[in-house]
Image (cartoon, rainbow, N blue to C red; front, side):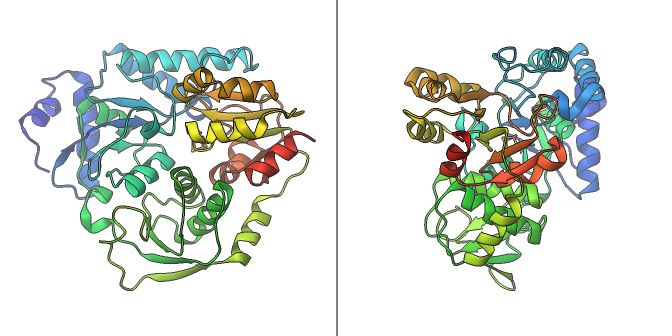
Amino acid sequence: MYLNKEEEKMLNGEKGVVPQRLMRLLVRLGDLYGAEKMLPVGSVQVAGVSFKSIAEPGRDFLEDYAQLGAKVVVPTFLNPAGMDMEEWEVMKFPKKFAEEQIRIMNAFRSMGIIMSASCTPYLIGNLPHFREHIAWSESSAVSFSNSVIGARTNREGGPSALAAGICGVTPDYGLHRDENRHPNFHVKVSVPLESSADFGALGWFVGKVVKDKIPYFTGINRADTDELKALGAAMAASGAVALYHVEGMTPEAASARKENLQPIDFGDNELKETFAKLNQGKDPDLIVVGCPHASLKEIMTVARKLEGKKLTKPFWVCTSSTMKDAARRLGFAKMIEDAGGKLVADTCMVVAPIEAMGFKTTAVNSGKAASYLPGHCKQNVMYGRLDDLIALAMK
Ligand code: F3S
């Protein structure tokens, strides 16, 4: 693989031991996938942040690198952590868990990483441009940036993303290349989709069929940005979709090659059946929205719907700390809290230790959360639209 002078210096150890080790990792990855060169990246997003996901070995790995003086050279953002970093005590997160999470965050901080802890970096100051090469990890963020923005990233693992942050480059293979961005499936949608839960159900259904391939959607006549993020998140979770196209909506749909696509139909029956499959539990003890992390618009919608209502069950709106701060200033946080809900920053229902906090059945409107909650958090899952979830929280 061709390396330029700077990259050679890193590999030879002239820039220190950390860039050398991580450049070796990137070169090996590139060789494995047939990359011929490295690409400079505009930004990085590192997954593997929650202590629940990486445990002691991951913590030790990060602390070792921090002690060796690892520093990122491009803007590098974090995936959600295992708890709200500001309000974990009020929310009764286990103390031992919190101590471990704080150690992990301190290691990241010492590397110069931006402590954003969100799966929606594109909403909080890290918005790549069309065709920009980036190295992101979290599957819904990867899907959104590739599909809705038209930026270019593979689905990086935690170490390869960290390597990209520290070396400033990523190997040129996979979704960085034009020829690998064409669709394999044609999904014909023949039912109106009216909420994030509908888009999540579509994504869950399609991800199961296409696995890691690229779907091309027709028949989606309207969708807002939040619904597209819900669609991509669900496909990335039930399958491993990192890129999709929507006719008339996403930037590479028009130029995508459309010959010989395998057909998939999604109509009223499929929508109803998917809801029924995902909605298996009853009597939820936790209701959560904000997967992927809620935008300001989603927080505003929830706040307005909760005005004057009294919730009787824990109701979380997961988001980034940036959005939480904005929601506080704009009065939305108070509206949610007055009704008995909680804006939860830096974490989510999947990477927080909700099973250790005593929750057994969680109601969500996210296809991604519905995919992961049984396995990752031992939860029974209820699936519904936002209005259904608010009604459940008032029972
Ligand atoms: Fe984000 Fe957690 Fe969902 S990381 S996409 S809110 S499972």
